[in-house]
Length: 281
Length: 264
Image 1 (tube, rainbow over the protein chains, first blue to last red):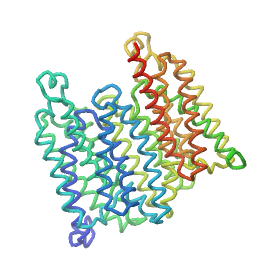
Image 2: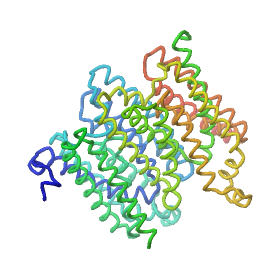
Image 3: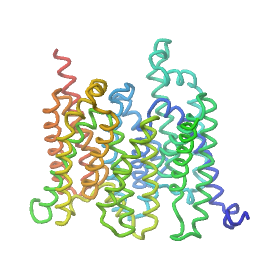
Image 4: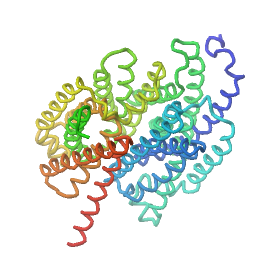
């Protein structure tokens, strides 16, 4: 029975174990940060940070450092640029994001182009854009832990002011909360979460883990603490199930379907079920 | 620079810039930059699917961009619009990853789908591009007044009998149409930059919608021409120059409106 669902060797494979471990950590971090992304209506910013992370990942290949550093540093810089142009106002926020994204996309094109010309690593484009959870190296585990801890630590530190300024910026400002500073800190943690997701499911799909589980959780409960817990559970479950299905798919036609496809599809299905259940109630 | 194969590049890029500048005006007006990013980017899966089953890329792009636009419209109707857009986008990209995994040769193809291949446009791509561009511009003319009214003053529009949801769907279909014609030629990144940078710049120079549309088209055409010329000289990807150029014109527009506000 078990063998019909889990192909042999799944639990013994060390690359699966490492992928599951890092994927689990990343899903928890993304869920903690993502609930606020949805509350603040900043999905586009998250998506943009992921795409720009692709520029970072490709330039990291170009100069020969771990892509995670590229993802992280560039998303952080992009978050700063968006903040500077004016992401703090709801009006014009999409525009600021769009301009930074457009420029960054151009840079991604350039770096991927230069990277593939110079080193002819044709696989680099695919790895950066769509992730490669099965081929992670265990050396990035400490970095993942530190960055994830940093992101969740920041959120925990500013939890209450962040919540208030997400739900009602005016009220938060009236109570003396430095709304802009809180926004900057939040944007920084979001860029960390996006960079981490980029490692597991790829730069341009990282929004799925950030927004999907969190949006589903917020459909099920209105309490933010509980929403974070539910989102983390959904994120970890979809990542692990995606990993399992991708492992099994080596025995399916076309062999080896991408992990990110399964994760993203599962995230969407869970969200649709939640929407449907809510509409029925 | 103007000989042989380059003629097609100039022609098509100009048409793309005109459509991008015109559609982009409404993208900026409605604050729908995310949708303008999501539909072209997601339609990339359509191109990959078309490659896989061996039909024309245009059909794949058309089906996926229309399907994605409809999905965003329906899912976003009740619920958070940005979440619906994000989830539709990543789902389509995930499908794209799957289809690419199925086909044998991929890295350069992904690259040209995402960032365009404007310098390699064949003659038989011209006719469908021009036809779709014509359809796009006619649709803009037909939708112009209701779209404008419903974007600026949704309540007045509703009183006058314009259903906001119908207008939203019409607008999404317009973005999908523009996407279908542009992506095979210039890639997903380029059209998005054109739909945001030049219109946003145009809006800071003038408040009159008609003038803004014309100005937006003009700026888009200039940006694209400059990008092709630079790309021809340096051999770097066109998408890079278009993205950078759009950001520069936007910065100029912002600087202009800042200066005007100060002198008052």
